Image 1 (cartoon, one colour):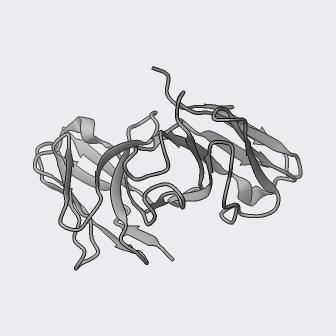
Image 2 (cartoon, rainbow over the protein chains, first blue to last red; image 1 turned 90 degrees about the horizontal axis):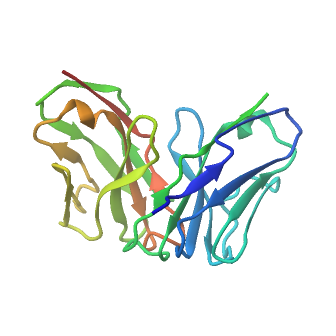
Length: 115
Length: 114
């Protein structure tokens, strides 16, 4: 079956512009996660959804970042007024439930470059 | 807070060599531990995991044992192949893998030469 998909695969934007990143999880997966990987760094956890609820938004780097999820499907990560330090690969993952019992399946990522 | 430290590499080995990639962690609770792998041009995928002390995770000839006394989860393989060339990430979950997401190390780039 289809895996996690993300779009766009690459995005180049000018500093100060808003960007929207999209994640389509595996069908039936109730949990969805966003991570960020900056050059030379490990993956940094940003936010998770159980269904369309995000109980803890404290991992988002700043108030310029927001995320939404429609039901148990598509999620969007929006970055407003982008800065150069936002340049990174943004990864989305989904799992059947929020538990270590269930594997997180990762998408291919969106590479964001802010010029 | 939680953290994962792993050797960064690149690690270059010849085919059939023995592989060890070290991983140590800091966690407030009793975490589950994971190794993820990213092959060239592909997404991250789970390689193996262990959810409690002394558990051994294994897959595709790779093994890692959850050592609580040394807070380690070193990845080993007895005989590597060229197809094992990839970036390997050690990770932990301190709340059952979900509520706080995964904490990752920086990744180890492994290069296997024929």
